[in-house]
Image 1 (cartoon, one colour):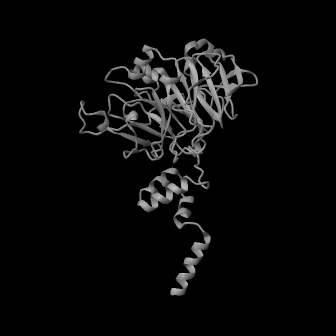
Image 2 (cartoon, one colour):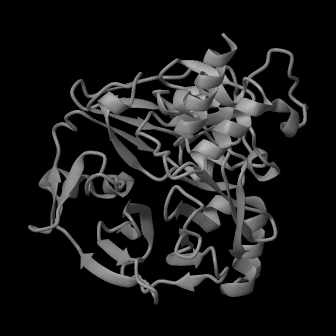
Image 3 (cartoon, helix red, strand yellow):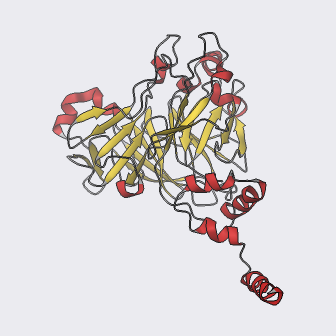
Length: 375
């Protein structure tokens, strides 16, 4: 019996694979990996090594919603840091309250959510990115040191940071490529880039300000949508300054042109040049009205807009747009109510339905979609 046990042990060591890692490789979702990590310290260590290694590649999954949590015994004058935050999982229709966040998130100083990272801007103008799943944080740079900064900007930074930086995205989901990755953002009317390895903010040669939305449409490709409907694309893959590879002002569908300002609600989506009701045909240089998203689900708001297949998003309805409140100007005002403009819009049924019910009057900090990312 002892000899058999020795032979089994030798076989396991010859494989060179931890049995726990074998289990991890078969787990179907990132949520299962999180549960695995919480079993004990040794399992946590194995999971950390696994997700940071070359064998791990996270599959597409439903974004989670980061939002303030509600407790019946809270009082109106409770400290905001004690009120807590939670993740809402659309697949399970369940809240997870043990969320790892930092002070800037509680203070409502998140200016973007991209590839699983929250982009944070503190009161001193320091920009950083933070992963609420792994706890990792990267200091990016200082707006005050590198950009033209007025007294008005200083006030806005202190009181309403999202009116100064209306949208920010990161270049990729990993912290492994710090020599090329960084943050791209809409700063006032400008487009600005700050690489992780440099910390200096670089103004891009945007030709159609002001801008409405930005995304990383593919690896190291950044697309920007202006309020007038123009689209510009930059290639960040080179060693030197980002190169603009597309600049077009497509025509609008007749119905959209008649609606005028309503087009300003359009957003880009990384799987295609798609807005909330229109899709860009780059060859014809025009926006084409969409009647259906097919098997796609789109997530928009203060986050990096994304489009996913419904089969990769358990708990979601196909041909639908899931949205959160991103009307920063009103949400940040000192009112007792706000931040509740969220739900999903079915293109097939042409109706808006809720996906989350809250008893909070003021949703602060504002809800953000966050794509689970272990790095």
